[in-house]
Length: 201
Image 1 (tube, rainbow, N blue to C red):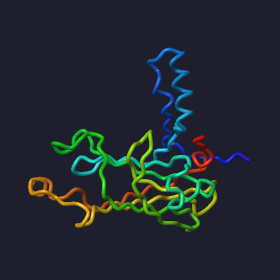
Image 2 (cartoon, rainbow, N blue to C red; image 1 turned 90 degrees about the horizontal axis):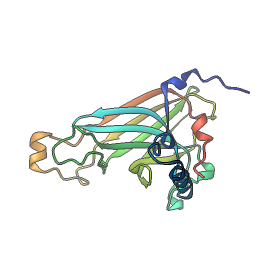
Image 3 (spheres, one colour; image 1 turned 30 degrees about the vertical axis):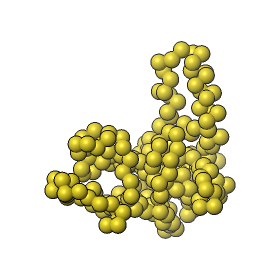
Image 4 (tube, helix red, strand yellow; image 1 turned 120 degrees about the horizontal axis):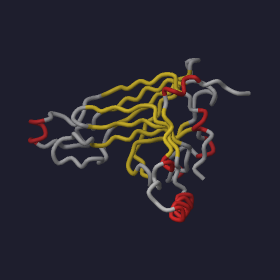
């Protein structure tokens, strides 16, 4: 049965393999393409939100294929996972002086709530992860609270570090006051069926 998905124009599937190797010769292309598979690097992610917040922080929300995360006893098994939800949060090119463009923003508390149209929902904490394609990011393997064919709403709450996790120097406090304020981002009518069927290996 074919499922009509008119909402897909609200999402963006990025295929890194489309542009990584366009400047290389054919022989180099095949060599690098094979190398990517050897390294088990995923080539597809579904971007469902992009934001820029004060003071110059870029946020990207993605759904990616499920993966094995180590240590395995601390994370949902790949066999029980539908998607790997991710938040990339980095310094933007217009970030404060001294901030490395693309640098990871650590010590945040990030919670994602995923709900289908029947009202079934889950809330999960996104924790720091590292891989080859994104480097440091916040993420979690999750089991969707419904069927792969369902349409979902996602709400992501980002809270600043606690007072015990981050010390703010006088110069930063005087000019920017804080690292970031608590933010909640909401995205509606998302279809994860395609990305859930993708495999990294």
